[in-house]
Image 1 (cartoon, rainbow, N blue to C red):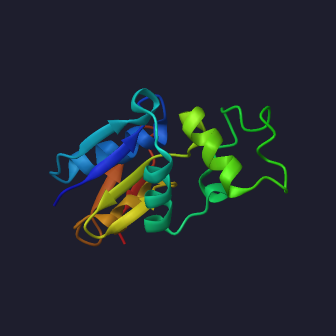
Image 2 (cartoon, rainbow, N blue to C red):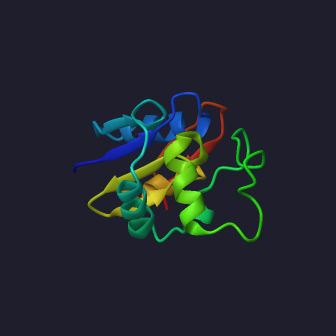
Length: 134
């Protein structure tokens, strides 16, 4: 199965998702989006596939979203997309793409829906929490 993860290695959730993918014998393509950045078309495609709006995908903590005024009720999708292209950190992560679909994998156990992991298989996250595939 082909898997792509848009990953931030400084994010615990993103690290957990990448580790879950590896733990179940997958070798994904890892895109460190803070280094590569985003294009508007790429974001539009990912958001459409994941059934997310730009507002749904906006990272408001540990990002400049508030300082840039992006949490206001009157901010348009166009304004959010422009800001996300200029400031890649504004996109929440990780976003995982597989043949089964695309999802913003927060919490990290959402990735199970995108993988062929047998129900009941468990994984221990880096904080010690055990999560189980549905």
